[in-house]
Length: 109
Image 1 (cartoon, rainbow, N blue to C red):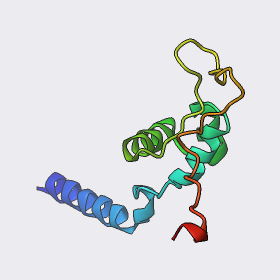
Image 2: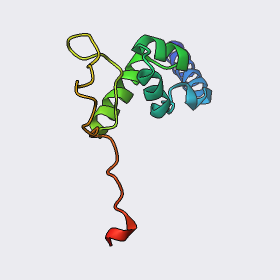
Image 3: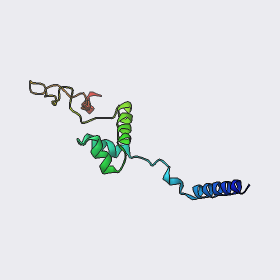
Image 4: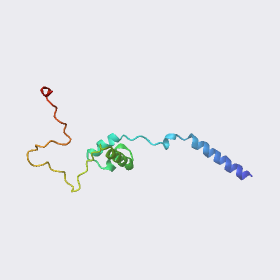
């Protein structure tokens, strides 16, 4: 009977100590994905970004995946061939798809 009292008492103390521990020890902190993407787009590797921002590598990958899904993730990784794309020959007369459309003149209205 005494052994049961000791075990129950020890369990009660353990539960009380566990309740007094800060809840932030297990809380997930927010990761600033825009800062992560800025770092990745500047050419840093996943491990470097994680170390610099004091976050896990999986958090960095999660931000990159989220940005890619939203369509705003410009990853600074080279193309499959390993080299950057060269601009088209011919003086660059074509407009970039990312360039804004020219505004119409006020006289055209």
